[in-house]
Image (cartoon, rainbow, N blue to C red; front, side, top):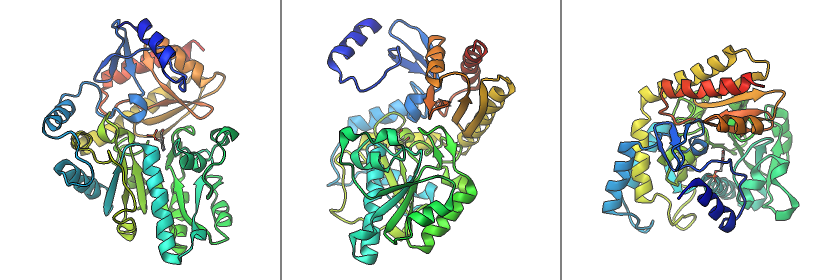
Length: 397
Ligand SMILES: Cc1ncc(COP(=O)(O)O)c(C=O)c1O
């Protein structure tokens, strides 16, 4: 089928909830993507941080194929080896105690919300301790609860009233705001992204995160870290909290974990390792053997050597973009291969469209930034090819 026919079918039969870019993607190789007509793109999006080990990654495809031949699904009523081995790998590499497997980022955050409420309920025996503090400009998902957790008014239109209550949004970086919001003693947790992704690739200051950790300990509230976008190697360590020198009570992950298959979950520390017990939570597909086998292969590829390369390549991209000295570039920010390029004098969306017309897939974030989330395995040659297109587009501004 050619691109035109595919777009026609989509517009006729698909709920039009996405403002899609004008490109049909048929296949990929490394960090390059191709349309049915053979047009090539360099990919700085990795399916919004999902395709961590690139396209047509042979070992990843083999892991899926081999597992599919053995057992595709069995449900959480039974044990499977990929599931147990993945749990062992994730807990060992994160320093956390236990894991729950889900399917998406929003669902993983929902699990953490339940965890925090139950943890406090068991301590105090009243639902009145169930508020959760989240940060302005955050993004936590599209379910009714995670939309309300998201600290951006544009995600709370009246169309979907009522949202789940019990969330308070505070300005990031101000401890007094958190202290004020918790003064009634009815808060069970603080939920945050260490680098606000959708909000604009905005890293939180390390000192603020450390203060929040201490504050949560003092009041016996949980610190929940949403690493759906920052996790699984994206920032140059398996989880971003490992560079913030703190341990969360729970951390969610999704996107890149299975390299392109739907998987998510959350890890919990010793303190709340046994808070959720039999019957408290579940997901039919959670920890599905094929997704787990894919995730084990992804984690094997995200070893220390690749993590070091992710940091190096991220610095190289930021240095190169800043080095161009274009007046339209206000600053670059981020960590590892999660990069924001803050733009002035043009709309990021328009620039992204121009990049795509010129052969580079790129994302936007917040109101002012282009966002780069290339596959973690991207080569220097692919980076340079993508940067050449970005430079051309910025030069023409
Ligand atoms: C930080 C963060 N949390 C949650 C989500 C929601 O993930 P999903 O779309 O898999 O539900 C996203 C998605 O962009 C995200 O970036």
